[in-house]
Image 1: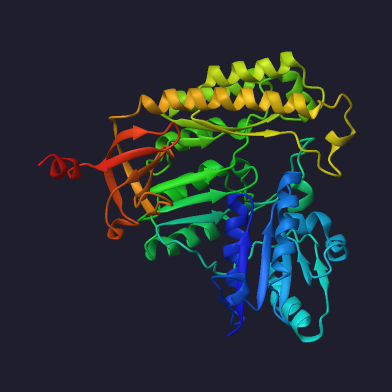
Image 2 (image 1 turned 180 degrees about the vertical axis):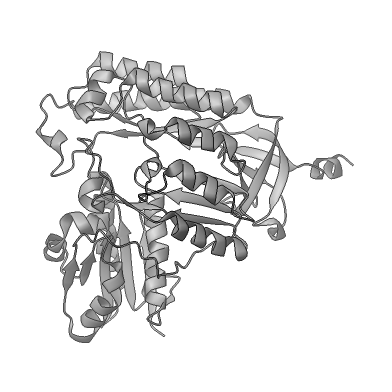
Length: 438
């Protein structure tokens, strides 16, 4: 049987798409390979949000072409493939195919052509109808699963490449999503994460995101519902109420802010200002006690002054985020922000990023130290990368390292948090503590 190796970069949507790609190819007889050197076909699923991500992929392609077998296929798929299209074939001659997010259904045919006669090809056409409803993804884990409910984006943030790489926004039918989640629950999945570029703008023509949360949360066997990434002003009263009233919905929201300055937010073409964002934070905290909030922040956006950056720092302190993904602004070809004047020097942006990271880490550590000694339910996800521990995750998305047997993987355990590194926790299963003391 032919073997395929898929290497994934970027967001949860790309992880979900890699599972989908494997589902497409499995129907054509492919099985997964553990290493690229073992594969007849190597696919790199890419991210285009920042230049660094693309440079990393280009470097990796240089390595992968060294292990490409005679008659083998090296392909680039995903957002970087969509952005560069046929130019990537010219730039890296060893690449045989380039396929965007809407072209995965055609992968078996394109691979067959490349293997049969060396025909190189690119498919980067947008297909507004494509949701891959008939393709069962091949998922790595059983207890938790990503479920894509929306593809594409209609927002036009001036810094963002996503509308160019993912196409227009379209949502799956609610009934199709519920059917997929029901099938997952029947096979042992208890936690699902709903995915979309602006997931809470979901609307299938008859149902909105509030309806979707309630419907998925009502599926028998589903104990946890997560979602990412939402857009701040798409948290309608109905969505907030659905979060509060659906027990399965977890007490964590990743709420991208990008900047704490209303002036910068306007230049970014975000659909809120500082005060409106803070109103959303207040609404979420008022409806969902104990909710954890994480965010995305860009520093060094064109025209950002020291006063603008100070407003970002003050917003971070005011909100008290549990964590934040922080980045220097990365110009993306074709986005409106590249035409803005007043570029921030790289050394200035770098120094601001260091200050922001220090603040985020300090606040997160303070919050996490305060949680030591508290009890939580964790879903045991698997073996941790170090220390011989199991890794579990709380409903508020805190990671806890727990000693215990592999038999616990996929199950839920009540734990007491015993310590923190500032970002992750050590913990013991309640009852296990007594055994240790005895």
